[in-house]
Image 1: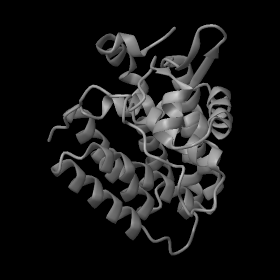
Image 2: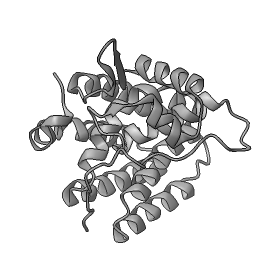
Image 3: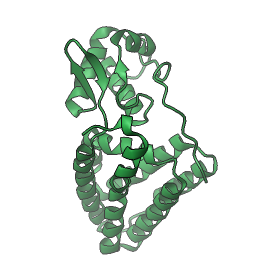
Image 4: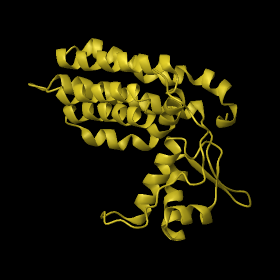
Length: 239
């Protein structure tokens, strides 16, 4: 089971958001696309961002683009330096650790709350596990990551606190970039699948102690891989 990683390519790596019938502000659509591109490493750490190029690729005007970039600056994913330019921020392990703490704290609380729900149904979680396995077989990194995220989100849904998942997303982006960087490693993917299965089994059994232990181990995996990834991709990391 292997995934192939190609060098992220900034040019042509963004989808147009300028023409859509979705009732959403243009600046929000621009933010979502840029944030996902940064998370997925289509816009890699350290990449220079040109307003002209971004506006052309996204098919939007400068105003919503600047609004979106300002939001990305607030989340720490982008920096704007006068007389220098705009760039994607490097990955900083201290930011990843903060994101890990928030995710672990909220997800263990959500897991306990989900276990307390009578008649909890883990069938959606089982299907998402199957989707992850199929993505591995197809060597589809994007599909695996999407099913991974959906599984964790479903735990918050079962807990009755879905908004908590949404609230932590901006900070979790720092952790997500490190997660995406580690995913092509076969041993990492295998371990993730095993941990996901253990979490779902514990939830079905209502075993809060065992489930929370699995979640804590799971949440810390990416950060434990941080030093090795930093050595492998030194240009992606900052102090």
